[in-house]
Length: 144
Image (cartoon, rainbow, N blue to C red):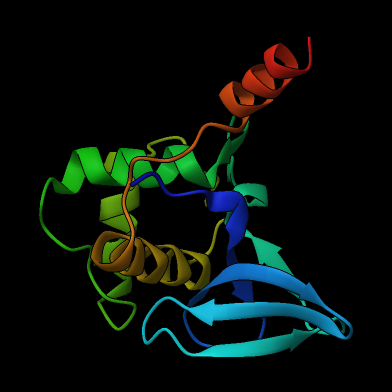
């Protein structure tokens, strides 16, 4: 099954990733990827879709989707190091997967989030992502 990164959410202050289910009066109804529990994320929470996240590089920005796929190429079937791993190990991993990442704006704290997200997607979703450009083209053809 394909993973739609536009419906996978990171919520500031909450651990893990969440799947968007529906809009509610006060925010969004979400489901934890880790345990399947549903809850309401208030509109005041900082909610970010993984589709909207990019990593700074020397040439601009690289979408998180591409970074996750590059990490998968480097790691193969292995898990990424955990967020508790040595910072040098994380830097080394990202140097292999994304050699031109901007060291002045992409910090170890960001790397920790990305490897945690990578491991959670690997375990509970898939790296077969829905391409938003292909989806828009299909919608355009259906309307024509």
